[in-house]
Amino acid sequence: MRDHDVRVHRSEEQVPRTDQLAWSMAEVATDPVAVEPEVQEMIINRIIDNASVAIASVGRAPIVSARSQALSHPVSTGGSGASIVGITEKSSPEWAAWANGVAVRELDFHDTFLAAEYSHPGDNIPPILAVGEHLGSSGHHLIRALATGYELQVDLVRAISLHAHKIDHVAHLGPSAAAGIGTLLGLDTETVFQAIGQALHTTTATRQSRKGEISTWKAHAPAFAGKMAVESVDRAMRGQTSPVPIYEGEDGVIAWLLDGPEAHYTVPLPVLGETKRAILDTYTKEHSAEYQAQAWIDLARRLHTEHPEATDPSQVDSILIRTSHHTHYVIGSGANDPQKYDPTASRETLDHSIPYIFTVALQDGTWHHVDSYAPERAGRRDTVALWQKVATQEDPEWTRRYHSQDLAEKAFGGDVRITLVDGTVIEDRISVADAHPLGARPFTRAQYVEKFRSLADGLVESAEIDRFLETAANLPDLAAGELGRLNVRAATGVVDLTAGPKGLF
Image (cartoon, rainbow, N blue to C red):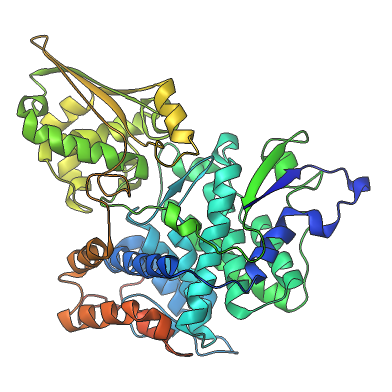
């Protein structure tokens, strides 16, 4: 890897294009380096993972809305269109990316990477796949493109914090997806450079979408970034240019939205000829909740069995969770969001509330992507009583481990101290989720397949489940024009295309 130094430049400095971060990213995208077998295997895993959570969402309101919008736009010229998850109908690639992006993100249930920023790099898949299907790309080309998308998003996330300045994390997704599409189509460096700049410029927004009363926009935000990436590439291919320098300019993103005029970042990027391996540092979710909650669900499940007395609010005086700065201030009591303790809060809010998630997992000994968020579950009297006794606290050591660059010690958990009314103290800790590569039960292909089968059960016919899994496993051999086979069709009667809400289109 090479370190790309990034700082703000005054206009009169005229920083050379080749010294700009967007150009270096474009060079990574246009590097014809081969994809390693283990990276290829993980890409297949993540395609299966995305399909799992997307098909499980087909009947949820945000997906019904986004799908209805996409179907209002016919297949555009220049290609055969792109599939929308669950159905046989197609739309133009940017609108298919929109609908599928919402479906993938709705349940907060796919892959993650956390460093200086946080991300769901699987959000690269819907826009890149949509363009590939529309233009008749092969499985080989899709693999190369997704390796780029994952690489560049992870590299940006390692180095540049967005949330510290209340900017939403999808500002790293727009550029990575645009770059991945550039790889897919074999575009030249100049075109990819312009597309990256446009994608960044159009996808910077505040983090209010993940604060307080969290709305349905949380699922739409990455879909919007993917849609903007598709449109940015289209404009760049037509010769249209972007603001330059987009990162380093004195009125650019870093100077005014991030660390300011004196900012300095070091972004790790592969040297030319170096394989793109960043996807191997990412990890998926066993549970449908914010990633920092994954380990806490696993610990709560264990405590449910070992200490059933801790599930009874009449026996519990307090529960203190000591964890990292990020977990405490974003999804813990440090956020100072009263909604995180509100039994009438939205699902999107509850999946960003460690106090709620830990309480329900502790009482139930399990976690379900629908049942655990049901209004009647959130409003249960004994749950509300125990929930109000849960607080979080930042611990410097867990914060250090959260930000560690050593993957062997990087952690997303913490310590819990449950004090009972009789004075008994129950203490336990967890570093990473069970499904994490260093966890108790790391996800392998078998677990990805089981996740898909479980979530597709009752929504997809068994023959279609088998067909999709076989297709995904054979991704490298899919010929040009066969990427549409990666779409999963819901069983008859599952999707009602007449139920979409009415809008402008």
